[in-house]
Image 1: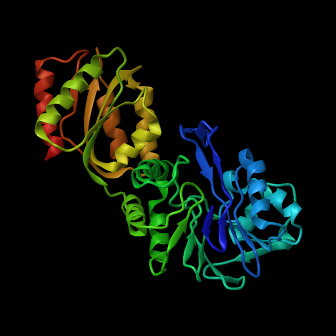
Image 2: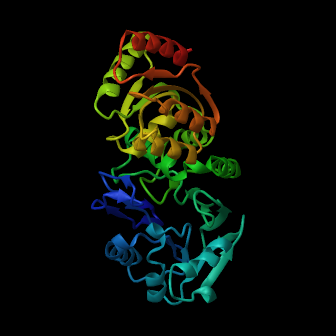
Length: 385
C-alpha cells in the first residue's frame, strides 16, 4: 500500500492475536504499522512486533527493491513496534538510528547490542533533511511512554504519530469502525495521560497536516478534524455524549432482575442511550470505553465477603487508574444481612475527580420489592436532572 508516490506502507496485520498487551480482547486482530520514505536518503519509520517479523522483513525488502535504508526513525520503544530494531540494524550496518534522548537511554534494555555509535539523537524541533522531504521531530513524553516522539514530514504534510490515533482491529478505515475501537484503544491504553495528550495537541495545533500515520489502525487521509476533535474531547475527560452506562454484578440473578426494572424506569423517562453491562461477563475494556463515552453511570453491586464483588472493585479501580472524572453516578447495593458495597463504591468514587454522586444509595435486601421500585424512581430522576 502506498501512502503517496514516495512513502510506502510496510506494516503487517496480525489476525491471530487474541489479547493485545495480554489483556485487551482483539477479535479482529491488530495492525503493526511501519512505513518507508524514499528520497536522497531512505528512511524506515519504526519496525513491528516479533509476531510479525517475517512478513515485515518481506514487506520491507520488497518496498526497498534493493535500495538501502539510511535511517530508522524510532518513534516508540514498546516491543510491538521495536522488536526488529536489532535485526534490521544488523542487516543494514550503515543505517543510522534516529531517536529521542530518552529512547537512546532505554534502547539497551531491549537488546544485547551496542548501537550507540549509530544514534542520531534528536530533540524538540530538530530537523532531518533527507532530500525533498524534511522531517521535524516533536517530543511526546507519556503518550503513553516517556520516550515517545512524533515526526512531521514538512513537504507533504504527513504526521507520524506513534501510538496516538491508533485503534484495535485490522479493518480498513470506516468512521463507525474507527470511533468504536479507537475510543476503546484510547481510554484503555492512553486514558491515564489526558494532560500529556493535551500538551501534544497544543504543540501540534499550528501544523498543516494532510495525512496522519499511526502505529496501529488505518492511515487517516480525510476529515482529519473529526479525529483530532475526538482526541481533544477524550483527553479533556469530557463526556462524548449524554447517555447512561448501567454496570452491575449479580451473584444469583437478583441484582440483575432489579437492574432490568431500573432500565425500564429509565427508558420511560429519557430518550438518551442506555448501555447495560454485566461486569462479570462483558469485556472490561469495553465497559471502560462506555464509562468515558457517556456523562452518567449507575453501578450496582452485591456485598461479597463484607466487601465489593471482585469485578466491581476491579472495574472501579481501573476507572480510577485511567483518571475517570467529570461524571455523575448513582449507586445501588445488595446485601442479604450486612450491605457494605454501597459505602465502599462511594469511597472509591470520592477518590476520583469531579464525580457527582446521587445523594441516596439504593439498598436492596436480597430481592427487589415495591420499596426498591420507588427508590429506583427517585434515583432515575436524580441521575437525569
